[in-house]
Image (cartoon, rainbow, N blue to C red):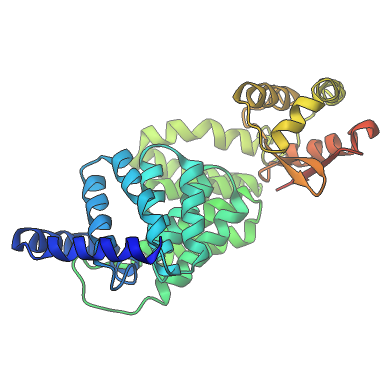
Length: 360
């Protein structure tokens, strides 16, 4: 935003604030939103009354459930940003809007941009962690949970309404982190985090499922059964919904924790399809999206593992002058083994124009 336009905005805002009704309404709204988001709001748009007025207007829309309208108003504010604090706040609230609209990947991208500015607001890192966890980006989610813990513990103590009760909050983060680490097969670290959650008296029924999953994955059948028995007493619905998954892990039928055999001919079948469509797929890598082609690619990748409920991820991009396709195993042991094999068997005819990777 150029200085001329900024000056005009400031003059308009100052005229508006001369109205007692508008200034009082702004003060009430700012105070209300600041109770929840003060740590990221207060440093934003200092000495920029026009932007603060627009920010409060967007937050009022969000409070009323009008997240699409709130997002549009927030988007117009990016041009007014001057500092990392401004960008941290705007990206955070854009993330909130996207998450409320069910756009989890976009929400994670906005939260990530906010976190990159390192604001002193634990909710930025917590919301980012939960989005990444939902999308099975376990390593990135775990790092965000660790950052959340640091932000909470380093948060200066202050009187506020409503007061943030740190013990249940810390317990919840440790519990979510434990769940993430189990999926990464970092069992010792996960068990430590579960005991940390316990230390903060965090014990919702879902924690019994997390304990049972850990015990099942590490071969402690009796302890897994004990946790499921406890769960049956306090939440029979959750126990019923979780029982099959725990039994499959114990019996080593869950592809995430035990390797499954697949039809290796499907690897060559995938590459046959890829070679036929390599030129069109290259367009995806160089920034020309096609929903139909992405859907077809998803079907081809998923078809390799048609007997497995969980599916691997993938993305296209650039690798220097080459096109790139990356496969994500999401720490699924079956995918880890077979995606490595898939990459190793990529035809040599593709390698002059393409790079292929299997990554967590």
